[in-house]
Amino acid sequence: MKTARLGYSPISRRQCIPITLAVIGTLSAALFGARADVASAPTLLVLNKSDNTLAIIDATTLKVLGHVGTGVGPHEVTASADGKTAYVANYGDRETVGHTLSIIDLTTRKETRLELGDLKRPHGIAEKNGYIYFTSEVKKCVARYNPQLGKVDWTAQTDQNTTHMLVPSPDGKRLYTANILSDTISILDIATGKATHVNVGSKPEGLDISPDGKELWVGHDGDGGVSVIDTEAGKVTQTLAVSKVPIRIKFTPDGQRVLISDPERGELYIYGAKTRKEIQRIPVGMAAVGIAISTDGRRAFVASMAENKVSVIDLTSLKITDRIEPGGMPDGLAWVEPRANNERKNNP
Image (cartoon, rainbow, N blue to C red; front, side, top):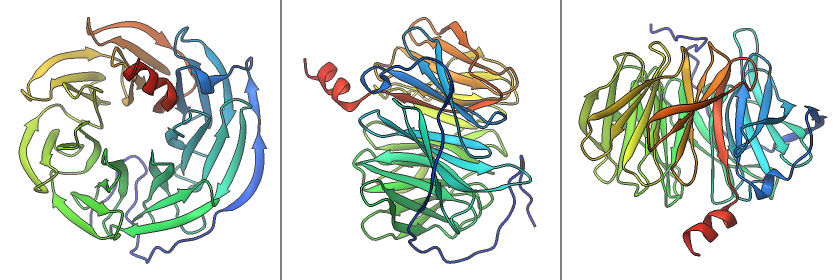
């Protein structure tokens, strides 16, 4: 029987059904820091796993504006399209099985804790078309939280072991999940809830889809490879030997490059998306994990849990230009820029 690393554990197969999230209540305000209207300016969100907090960072000055408490073991974060609300998957730790999402008003810095019932060990989380999609390792499924209804209104089974990270397709019709202990990627049709699976390398975890939706890159923690999947064919077209543990993957907004972090080597690898060749590798600190990229594609941010820092990388010079100290064991990152701002930039 396979065993999971870093606190992952094999779990029994059970049916996942839609549930209504019970709002436990507003639990915490900002722990410290001056208020700012983050909804109107680019902001970096950083989850501090050992502190159980969300750090809110001014993306221009790189100053920490404040912290908001979360549940135990916050691992991944996403934000609403208007930039006003953050959603945090509280995965838990070795002693505590996480079973909540934190919903945080980024202006008032108030948190509401939402009980997920049987949807335990939530991890990967992403916003698409106004909905919040997240994985549940225990239930082996993906669930969708509807902010307008205040409940989960859709679920789809992967029936795979350790369904961990996820990414939606650009058109919002599909979801892709990495299933660590099944060595598969699940492709979920949102309209039907049907899942198909693609075999990849050992212990897939980090994944991202190209901006045009044509390629999915998947890192294998177990063998250091990266599978390149043709999303139309649903097949692996190439496997790259990249690093030791390619734990997180992120395409640049223009689709030209792919960033891959390795926690064991403490490096960020930059690959050409077309050439599939390494362009550069940058030392960013041990336990390098979460990656975020600014909407304009000029900067990348990489969290180092071992050093309690986030490296800021200029994607033109490919050099570290600054470091942020957001809190203890920073991991999940999210770049927040209201969609209206993006539309103005793209349509002057």
